[in-house]
Image (cartoon, one colour):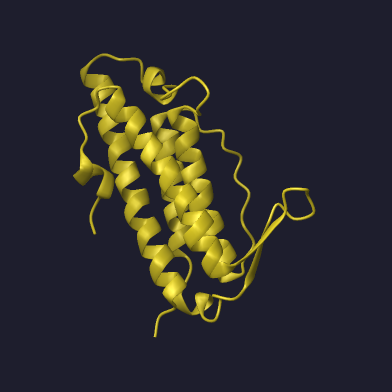
Amino acid sequence: MTSPLYNASVPVLQQMLRALADVLKKAEDHAAQKNIDPDALLQARLFPDMFPLARQVQIAADFSKGITSRLAGAEVPSWPDTEAGFADLQALIAKALAHVESFKPGQFDQSEGREIVLRPGTPKEKKLTASAYLLHYGLPQFFFHVTTAYAILRHNGVEIGKRDYMGAY
């Protein structure tokens, strides 16, 4: 039997990362067709105090690698988040997908009760079981940043809809 945490994380992250890659491709094509500087989209925000599109994608990728690594009891890799263009963001998503796909279901066996410590040794330290981490922190954070990236692009005229957001499932 496959671990419930594997089923609730890896396939979901794969689906949404692929959908995010497709949405970014549509955004890049939109910019080219409308003769828009790609940076106008990459630096677009929904509100001045929010992160721009490029950072939203970076954070979504960061959460995908953090979720899978922590649930499997593996080291979370450190990536520099220096992506500047659409091609860089596509490469980041491909790297995140490869990382997510590198985990096998058996690595998640009996991980539901594993303790996940966020921000260890700081005043903001938080201890959660792996299942609470996934369901109440990791996935909501991941979906927030994927959704915000989608919303930024939709707000800026990229012709995308719910099917684009959901991707293939």
